[in-house]
Structures are given as C-alpha cells and as structure tokens.
Amino acid sequence: MWRQFIGFSALALLLLSSIPHTQAQVPYDPICQQSRVWVWQPYELSQAEQGQLNRTLAAWQRHPLRPFVGCLQTQRYRSADLSCTRQGERFRQHCQLPLLPSQINDHHILFHRTTTAFSQNRHISLPLGADVSLLAHEIGHWLGFVDEYPLSAEIAERYCREEQGFPSYNLVWTAEQVMTEAELNELHQRLPWRHKIADFRVLGKLRSDGLWQLGSTPEHSIGLYATTTCAHAEGFTWRPVSRFTAMQYHDTNVWPALYLELAKHIQ
Image (cartoon, rainbow, N blue to C red; front, side):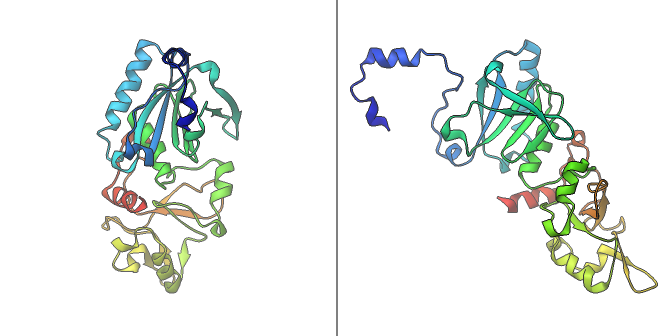
C-alpha cells in the first residue's frame, strides 16, 4: 500500500498530516498488533472527568486481570462522530465507533456519557466516571466470566438453557437441584474447575432417598455454590466459591485465585 505515496512531495505529505482526524497516531508495537484493545475517550472532557479516567486506567495497570488482556491504547473521538441508539430491555446505549478497517477485529472500550455499563462481543461501554472495578467486571466478560447476579429476563432467556451449553468459566447451569449419583458425577466432569475437586461427592449432600441435593458445604473452599444468575429464567446456576466475587458485586473487586487460574487457561 505504501507504493501509492511514491512521488508525493514533502509539501503534500505535510498538508495531509495537518488535516484534523479523530484517529490517534499509535507507534508500532509487534505485541500490541496481535492483541490490541482500544480505549476510546472523548475530546470534550472536563478536568475532573479526565482526572477520573486517568486514575481508572492507571489503576488497571496494577489489576490482577491485566496480564490476560492485550495492550490498551488510547483513542480520542469527537462526540459528534459517535452514533448511539438505545436498545434492549434496559435501554442500553449501543454506539457505532468511527473505526478504521484495521481496527474492526480489535477489542474496544468506550468511555462516554452514559449511565450504564455493559459488554457485548468485542465492545465494552462504560460511563465516564467508571472506576477500575467496573472496568474489570466488564473485561471479565471478555475472559469468559458471567454475571453472578440475576441476568435480565431478555438475556437470561438466551443463556439459561441446557441446549445452549452455558458459555461460562465461573458458572455451570443445571435443570434441577437434585440429581442421582451418576448425574452428579457427570456434572463434575463438565465443571470448568473440575481439576480442583478430587471427589465429586463434595458437590452435594446425600439425601435419605439416595438422591443428591446440589450444593457444597462451607468447609470446602472450592465446590458448588448457588448463584441467582438465572433467577428470571429456567434452571439453576452454580459457581465454585462461596464468597462474593467481582462478578457478583463489581465494587468488591474480589477475584479469587481460581478465577485467575481459569482466565490463564482461557488464553
């Protein structure tokens, strides 16, 4: 592609470089070229807004999830170039970014004037005032983690189904809360964290009728613990730890060692 510039005078190149453009000039980095994340922020920021955004991005450099995400590269945009529409049950703002063809397959984090945060495919939408714990929660979705609080009915209907194969590393879905021993063993085999459980029987409690009631007891640091993820749909969801995590309450910023281990295997 560079051949087309042969014959341009130095003056012509200077004039081209002076044309206003929304795309930031980013130096070539071979590592970032393989795994690149664009952080979009508007030109029109107050001093307080810019300060908060800078603090969030600085804190991300020390976050335990950082090693699992590609290089963050800042990109500026003009608000007038952003095209947004409200969609879905929660009227989230879905925005079209002014992407270059080379950026289409990259991941993008958009900070803009919105009140809700969400992640969808390769895009994350965040309020300007988002802190690092909210940023990390949304990036957690990129890594394969699902919310441990109730999904909206619209989303739950799509994911809380056995035939869909619940796409998650921190949760597993079951149709019932009671199983036979053979079914419990099968459940153990499909747990993303099965390598941490030596005996599948810690996943439940044996009842007098010979069936197993799902759910581990608190003395097991890793097991099977109920979440409310599918409260608005069919079935039940279970996570490996009993404590609150950042996928349930983002402001706890708690990422259990097991979650980090699972994230490492995702890479």
